[in-house]
Image 1 (cartoon, rainbow, N blue to C red):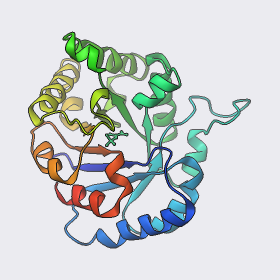
Image 2 (cartoon, rainbow, N blue to C red):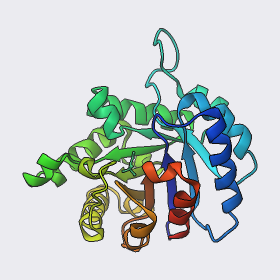
Image 3 (cartoon, rainbow, N blue to C red):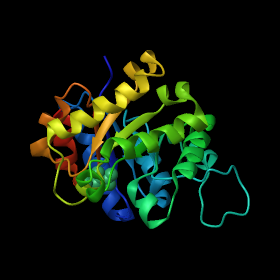
Image 4 (cartoon, protein in one colour):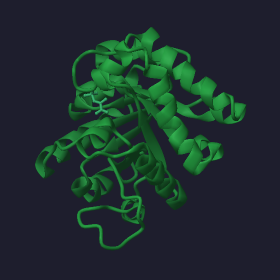
Length: 249
Ligand code: PEP
């Protein structure tokens, strides 16, 4: 049985003062019926604050991105070792906003996955199709291409140590959620594609759904066989909503 994971992606939101309240409220709500593993991914500058406030809480934290390089002349970048310095356990890799706004390629995403894994972080690899790709019937081809790039670089065994997040781009921040069946179909496709190379890896890996998950649709999504939790954007900025999603497991 795979443990359910609920990860919050704050994107470029928050403030020191606001985070204090949000983190404390999430921490306070954890005893109340939350059995999922919970992860918070704040903007990098707030990771030290998050580490301080969540220390000993049982909640994990992580980065929203990292550099594929270990160190050196990469102004503005953050390395895996730096995330580990502040006890990050997870890091989101290849979020659609990184792919579209920062032109991250499949190959670069694969390098980042490898860098995270080598350093001992758990990568949360985001994959997902654009609306026009879905409408053209290309969903599986796109997801397969994104996944295969990582398998080619890191190897199938490395995937077992990571987490995959299926995030249809048309559902991110739009209020349009994939139906539970639409999401389940892609999750099952991902698992089958992994199983073709290694059945054990396919069985073990957690596959999260992300894209406008809210308290009122979380339970039906999480009830699907191949959905092992969620990557939550907007709703993770409100403690009550985030906790309600965590409790929907
Ligand atoms: C995300 O940013 O990964 C995400 C899923 O956002 P939202 O929940 O707001 O759609």
